[in-house]
Length: 388
Length: 165
Ligand SMILES: Cc1ncc(COP(=O)(O)O)c(C=O)c1O
Image (cartoon, rainbow over all chains, first blue to last red; front, side, top):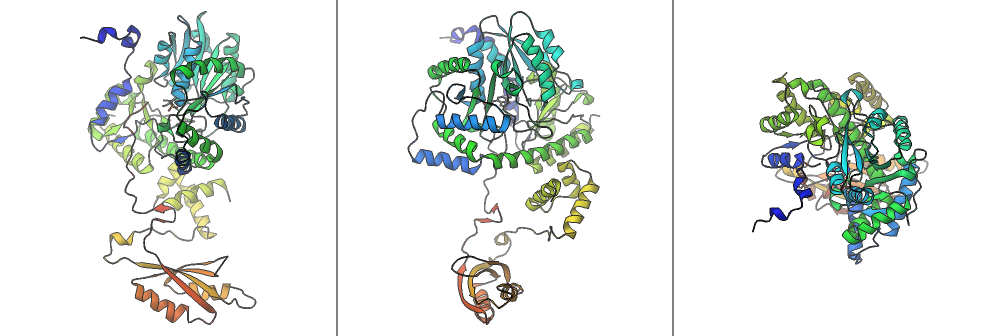
């Protein structure tokens, strides 16, 4: 029996992620230094892990409340208020999810109706466009430009808006460009957003990982909290990718609607991970600060090295990605990444997998030890010198 | 102390082998700035030296022996424990001396080639000091972690998948 015809057209039409294809290539090779990884190289801080052991020993192996343990929601609420001056009611305005990924999925499924347009700012995290489509919406993409340091401009948002536009996805700091938007830039965007009555999905999973300026959370901007679903999680700043834990905060009615989907499709986020996250919220500051300091040094290192090599790279203000231009080499970003992998065993991700605006760039993750970064830069230097 | 001094010290505390050029790049400063900072820190003795953490067991046939000795002493009038501590820490066999609260006064770490050699040092030199009342010697059997570094930790391979979103 041929089963392909049973697969829904929508899923059938979904493009497989370009990341996946590149992963298959890289995974076959030995001695690869990977700058292709979108997660921390740090192992989860020991006290988080140990707290999870303790919870398991105590027998915390059952479901939690659908929205997540109330103690955890309270701690997240305190954290959001302490770190970002945000005021969310842990009972009604927070839901703990299986990664920020599920929070994005829940949010989009909750608000999108067939025909609704959702603006996605590219180059972007690879999941936004497919999730909008799966939710039945129409993704409308905006391409940020290198000459603007990949910063989203209010005029670009204006141009993309149609009567069908319902929401906009923002990601600050951004994956894959590392672009950081400061308070003023966000305020400019907020004006257009308010004028056009858009809902905002603000993915702030990299909020802790900013290196030069103070961070402004989008819902902390005047009048934005009431129209923003804040999405974040423990994966990046707390080095907890494998635990699969994130959360969303927003208006009570929207969160309640998200919890409705969550209770039928997921029940709750993993209990042992929630216990680890509780420790992360209570006693994680120091670890986050140390990791952030380390990322900042690596960022300084990789950005100056890339520029020395001849791959021009603006200074990214956050996350752990550098996004240099490879246009000088005359190669497309896919050619560059493939040849670099074959010749020098360094994996980077071709920019085009993050949207058409990413062509001509590659994403280099610097969540890797200095020793590895150093070696990777040597290899890339050799590679680029042959082509300039 | 300034923030950049702290950042610099933390970097070289973890790796004394970092070249100035590398440090400059990591900190986003010029090589001259970093050299100057280092010179200042050396002058004010914030940096006391650059040592290397070695697992001698990997190179020598015989492992070195370390003993932690709890020492009870009579403090001297006017100078307290400092004078007797000095008498002890001047011996090259002694690698560390701490004044402790609790059941004894000085914690002394002694290194030697063999247990006999350390025993000899303790009975002939340490215990023989007038102000030393008693010693209790504990030999180190295995080092798991030293100065923040986990030894025999060969499990440092990257467990992440090569490419991810
Ligand atoms: C911008 C962005 N949002 C969300 C996620 C998903 O994170 P999580 O592990 O919390 O699902 C990622 C992971 O790469 C990301 O880069």
